[in-house]
Amino acid sequence: MNRRPLTVAVVGATGVVGRTMIQVLNEREFPVGELRLLASGRSAGRTLSIDGQTHDIQEATGAAFEGVDIALFSAGAGVSRELAPAAVRCGATVIDNSSAWRMDPEIPLVVSQVNPNDLEGHEGIIANPNCSTMQLVPVLMALRDTVALERVVVDTYQSVSGTGAEALAELEGQIRAHVAGEPKQASVYPHPIAFNALPEIDVFLRNGYTKEEWKVVTESRKILGLPDLRISCTAVRIPVHVSHSEAVHAETRDPITPDRARELFAAVPGVVVQDDPAAHEYPLASEAAGRDEIFVGRVRTDPSIADGRGIAFWVVSDNLRKGAATNAVEIAEVLVDRDWVGHATSRGAQRYRGPVPEEPAGGGTA
Ligand SMILES: NC(=O)c1ccc[n+]([C@@H]2O[C@H](COP(=O)([O-])OP(=O)(O)OC[C@H]3O[C@@H](n4cnc5c(N)ncnc54)[C@H](OP(=O)(O)O)[C@@H]3O)[C@@H](O)[C@H]2O)c1
Image (cartoon, rainbow, N blue to C red; front, top):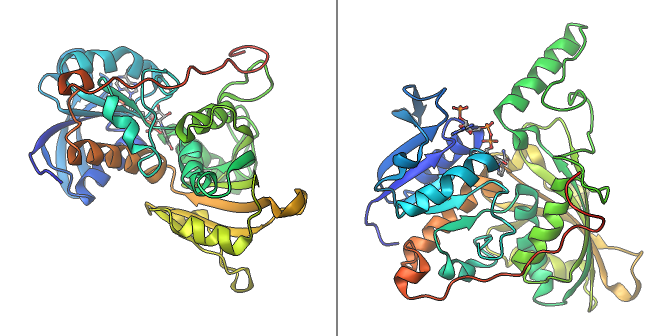
């Protein structure tokens, strides 16, 4: 990688994703000359200690991006909508973790090992997918490229860190209340999350799906370049701290055996197959936490689909790392490696143009 030191801003630096971003930048020795940590006015003037180093926090304002080369945003869609264009006007390239820009046809939505070439035409904003989509598409890519994908059904079991720091504190509080025999107070989620499973992640749309479920549908289609892929999702929040798990049923055009699927999955960069049911070996949220890989196991034929064209499997990954921070830093690494940090028109490259998304059946957000 070109090691010219860059000025890197992290917006939402005090949050669970922001802190992980700083950690991943350090671990991967990303060429950071100056690290600018930005958060809300509430945190301005405070310091943040990461790996024994103390950093000052500034308020995220338009002016805070002067001189920034790359800005990693993870402070929610509202902040991204307001401040990402300001950062771009200052010359920065934004890698955004929120849902603000993902389905914009002019913004590349990228998983590093699936569609890095889409980065070439960026005009300053690049979107990082939703964490549940992120861990799914590299595995689906392996099927798309060999036996062709016809239909996918995915059910998610998502950790509480996916909602952020406040939700983690709520889960801890409810566990303590339970042990003390007191009522469990819920404010982040509509019901207690401790000892529960909540089939409601993000708001409900008029088509009966939640926005989280619909993100998996539309983002997977965009990243895989399969606008007509038949795909459905049920997203469920469970009381796990870190790592999302997914049960996936895929129907392929050509037959596929479990052995062949394991080979294909293992050949995808960043994907690890863990599949020895006799030894009780399969991906676990607890073991994926803190790791950058996507783990796949429980690979088996889906007998409900004719002619050996059905395959079922279990996918687990750390939602804060590959699901957010690691992929964002991997995108930054591709930009540096290929000399694409600058905006497309300044490099004489063609602007990115992606598919125009369809409205969900039955209308928009409820
Ligand atoms: N958690 C995940 O697994 C995950 C995965 C993919 C994407 N994301 C996305 O990443 C974003 C952050 O998630 P999180 O889980 O890290 O949330 P979090 O722990 O609640 O942190 C939120 C961060 O945003 C900052 N912030 C809030 N309002 C702000 C404002 N007006 N101006 C500037 N900064 C502001 C907060 O700063 P203060 O401390 O000053 O309030 C904090 O640093 C969200 O868009 C989320 O959808 C999360």
